[in-house]
Image 1: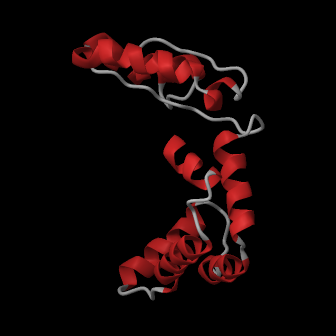
Image 2: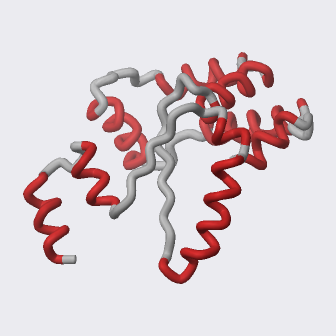
Image 3: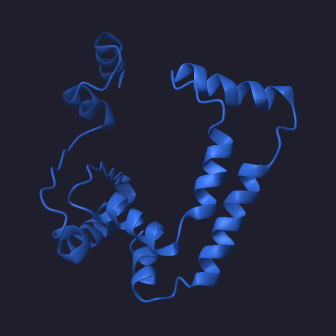
Length: 150
């Protein structure tokens, strides 16, 4: 992610690169459903999300054709590097690489991207511990059962 941001800031992401990427996404969006299953899946996503926007594909195509490189870059920075945006970064470390990870963690903690992001909360433990503390596990009984079987 940092390499991508650096490329954007250094001007390595040219207008030609932007057009290539946009055309690639447009090609994927314009692809017709090759089976009834794909069409059903697309419609079912609208039903299950309660959005009922069955014209979403065409609306996304129309929007993508009008977006500029500057708008894209502004949105990218807002989503990934803005203090306004809430973000969850997961860092998983294998025991075999714990020492290497400590070196990287120290380097990252001093990097301007991370220091400019404001308050960061470090949660130690397993993913299940995190989910349980955050109330993200749908069934606390199952979470406790899984934790007990580890």
